[in-house]
Image (cartoon, rainbow over all chains, first blue to last red):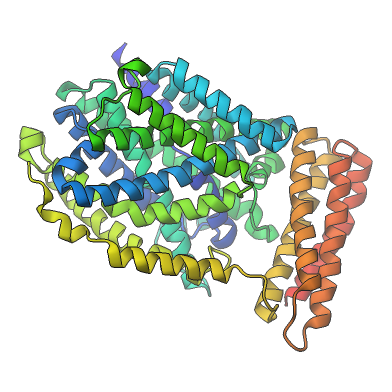
Length: 407
Length: 148
């Protein structure tokens, strides 16, 4: 029974791995550089495994989620900077995800886009209000498994497997090194996006993880995120095998779905669209909760989806306000795909503000007792702190130099 | 548990100012100013991309491998993007020596937009889709030539 529960959790993690940032950047990277940037996805997946395991462990041992730790460990002023940057990035991401939900619904139903934004907002509110926490994650995670159709599409497109293999070895065969760097930063930002660890650690506290759950935490983060990374590979391979050869620059979510339709026909298209719908809907809920978790944890409010809304009223009001704000921005007509690129780049800027406190707390015996980082977690943690600092410093200059990836 | 003494490390005022400046510069970069050779190349590649994607979509429709709503919506998105390029290229000032190329590309973008509009209006008509494949392919080739 326990193995079954673990398997369900892992399946949900795989299905829930991809969000609109992964979709946009992986396919665009494939369409621009073929398979050359697959190695960056590997780096990003290992990074999110290292830090999600760390913050899950912190949650299980100390009962503290990320922004509890931020507030306590780095002080109010620095914590406030981290909070503001996290909330801005969360809101951008939430807006992009909700726009993505509406676009998917439109591609499936043909109904007017603005009506679908309203329907998406209402549906998300009902799901968040009514459905139990563990089932929200599983429902969208299992639905997101339809995205595996892109793995089948990648195989059916008959890529050059030798070139795919070479893609896992860092190399740069291009006349546009700055654009290459921009996509590398975007891919890392998308794979290690901060809301994932906010949600993961808060979820651990919500589900009352304790030290006995450390094994489950390790399995979930390693296998779930690891296998979820396969979806990113598949998306980049589809981009490289189909769009690069044809000279297509994917600017729409529909173009990504076309990547499943061309090799697999109608069934591929429908599975692709349903998979994207579940993936971006799940990510919308994750970012919505993350925003409310962050604020409530930082200000010391009662928080948690397991509580009755009246038991954590400020938490409930926060996620509702965030949802209304995001819906308002989407209704203004902003392009969700374009917004995604900004959200991913600015989330890359915010990475150190999220990951440094986690690293500090995971090494603090006051919180962690005998469960502080071991030598491997520390070595990887430090390497990734260097990597994300470089990413944070270079993200905005690269965005400007490449005109947001337009070269 | 240690607290506030590490705030200096995270002092962000200068960083925030620089970031805001860079963002404004970035937004200023997204302008509709003079079309130079580089911009012409970029826009021609864009038109070629839209035409090629339209051709892929038309091919799938002609084989009954797509769905009505997907074709209707996606063809409309592609058509609108091509139409936006047509308008921008028709109005924007150009660098000396490339005016005729820019206006030619504008007309081509308009043609691509019209063909994609046909796909949008007849999302299940295999005959219409089949008849659009070659023109869209030719348009993509013409745009590629202008990009060189």
